[in-house]
Length: 216
Image 1 (cartoon, rainbow, N blue to C red):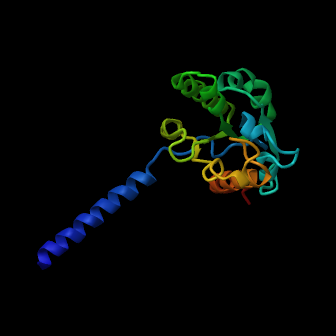
Image 2 (image 1 turned 180 degrees about the horizontal axis):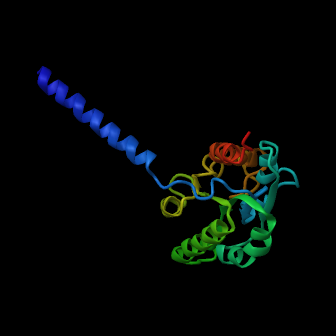
Image 3 (image 1 turned 135 degrees about the vertical axis):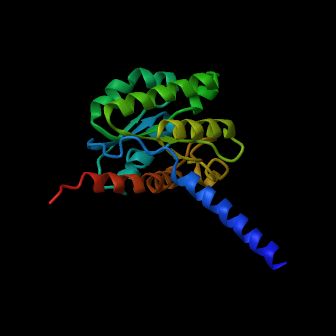
């Protein structure tokens, strides 16, 4: 019994070690050393702040949580195709340190194939990385809603070396008190979105700050 017990403990320890090793050796976030000056929230109506007054959108709330300037580059009604067309002027020319990419909702509503959405987001990530900035991909799924997009975007983020922010609307789209309509958050909902984004990007902002700290 003691031998079997020891073997079981050894097997569990080995599995844990493999799991931790796999997690630690995942692809690093590209451009952690970014020299940019701004966080840019690039997306559709969720980034724009549809349904609330100026200053209540999630980028505005995020700007009050960080010490880095935050630019709202969200456009109501945009698909990922639209975003790709305006990325140079609205993102790449704005000296980005980190770009939070949030697209997909309008692609789905306008019946843009999921493969096209993923290709457009992939191109966005490549362009932003080429500019020298970090990328975070924000996922608007909640439970089974948009689950297949969540899986695909998570995989894309991993492959590209981007930060992944899952389910930013979780618990919001099912709670009328947190919405301005059937989908969009209200002011309280956007606070939740902003805090989720903040928690996801904070470790990388700290690493970036440490990497760029002047040497004595």
